Every structure is written in structure tokens, then in C-alpha cells.
Amino acid sequence: MALSAFDFEQPVIDLENELKALQELNPPPDNLAEQVSALRERIERTRREIYDNLSAWQILQIARHQARPRALDYVRRIFTDWTELHGDRAYGDDHACIAGFALLDEQPVCLIGQQKGLDVRDNAYRNYGMMHPEGYRKALRVMRLAEKFGRPVICLLDTAGAFPGVGAEERGQAEAIARNILEMSTLRTPVICIVIGEGGSGGALGIGVGNRVLMQQYAFYSLISPEGCASILWRDAKFAPEAARALKFTARDLKELGVIDEIIPEPEGGAHRDANMAARLVGQAIRGHLAQLRAMSIDEIVEDRFQKFRRIGQWEEIETAP
Image (cartoon, rainbow, N blue to C red; front, side):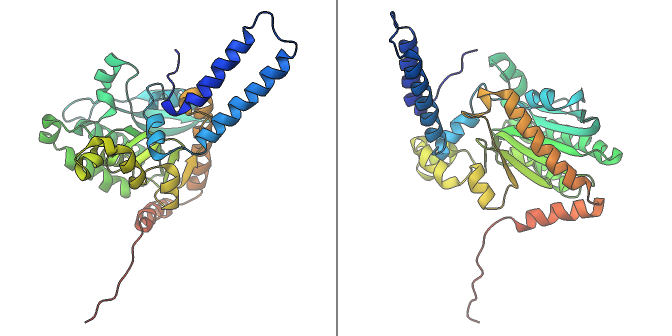
């Protein structure tokens, strides 16, 4: 499948077209090899300059790319013996949430993920990765099994937000998310959360309370979409790029603020350019943090998670006159 390009990649596209035209010259120039080599170096240099200076709005576009690897893409590339569990044992099964067990280097782990679709039909089946209450309850059911059997929990976050439909609200969407946050904060097993695309508000946080919170380089994690923020503050979604900058939702911003623990690098041009390499990098990060957490006692793991979230944020104390 041909990958669609972003507007900000136009300088690279122009150079690639120039390279193609050069290679098709007939007769070819005497110094063809030299010209091709120089042009390829220029292409790589231009692409590097673009991706080293991306705006928050441009990063958001990469995070939303239709070909970006989904949760199941990482599950199949990093883990083995994936066994999925279904249903919340109360209402039904939510296809936007995947949950089950697998092996990581022959060690059993629990996997929870938000799964977006790959095409129109699949997106309808997966509800665009927006979980219902039964999805959060399914995730919690499987996490409790992981706690019972001493399996580390690995969560893959990728959602625009929890589903805001009337039915979801009637079935207790807010309670389901709040319950997960409460239960995950004291879960007696290691928990690693990774934002692999969109980290949309409480919808992501409902499976996002971990000892370690990691983000891929071109993912984002925000309490609201920039379009939604612009519509509220400026009454016009055209101000979304300005809102994106103000929201500080990029991996670099959140690492500086102490919200996340590590930025996982991506292949040049984004994870959608090389899913196998992206999976290798995510797998390396998981293994590194899992080794650290396995060296800790259960009580230390729970306290570590509590202290992590107590440290998040910036504030200033001001003394007032009596």
C-alpha cells in the first residue's frame, strides 16, 4: 500500500521526483552515479531537518496516520502465544479493547490495548478505538487476573477518547474509567503503559496508570484534542494548530514535565514507515523497564506507582497575609 505523504514533506517529495526524473534520463549523463548519490544525500538531509523541527500540530498528524501500527501490530511483532479474552462478564464485549495474555521472551505477561481499525469496515467494528464502559471493565477483569497470577501488565494506549455516546453514558462510562484509575493505582503487579498513537484524555487514562508511562516519539497525550480546545477557546477549529502548541502534548513536552518516563524513538518519518523497526524499539523499551520492575518487591512496585503520580505537575506555593 502506498503511504500518503504530509504537506510538510513536500520538499522531500519534490527531491524524490527530481531523483526519479534523473534516473530515467536517456541517454544517462556521464556522472549519473555521482548525481544520484548527491541527490539521495540531499533527500535524507532535508527529511532529517524537517523531522527535527516538527510542530505539535505536525506531530499530531503523524500520530493519526491511517497506516500507523495499531496495538495488535505490536502484539504480533513483539510477543508470542497471544491469547485474547473477551467480555466484561456484565454486559458484553468491546472490540475497541483487546485484552489477554502472551509471552515476552518466554515470560508470561498480560496485554491490554486500544485497537483502531485498518479500513472503513474495521474502524466501524473497532469503534475507531473509542472504548465503551464494557471495554474498561473487560480490561480491569483481565488486569485482576494478571494480579492474581503475578503477571506484569502492559497497556498500549491509542484512542481519540472514550466513546461519548448516550448508551455508553447510561452504562456508566465515567464510573468505569474512574474505577480503572482507582484499581490500577493499587494493582499488585508491575504495570507499563505505552502511548503508541493518540492518547486522548480520560479514554487513554482509563488504562494508563502505570509504574512506567512511555511514549513513542511522534505520539501525543492530551486532555483534549486541539480541535476541541480551539472550538472552546476561540469558537473556531481553524485555531487547532495554535491550541496544539499550547496544550504541550508532545512526548518531548511531557518528558520535561515529568508526565512520562521515556520517549521511544521511531523510524525516520514515523512508525508507519517501518512497523518492524518501530516494534523492535518498543520491545526494547518494554524489556528494559520490565527488568527494573521485576527487581522490586510487590510493595515497592505499588509505592513506586503511587509516588510517580504524586510527583507529576508543576505548582507554586504563595504565602498570603493572615
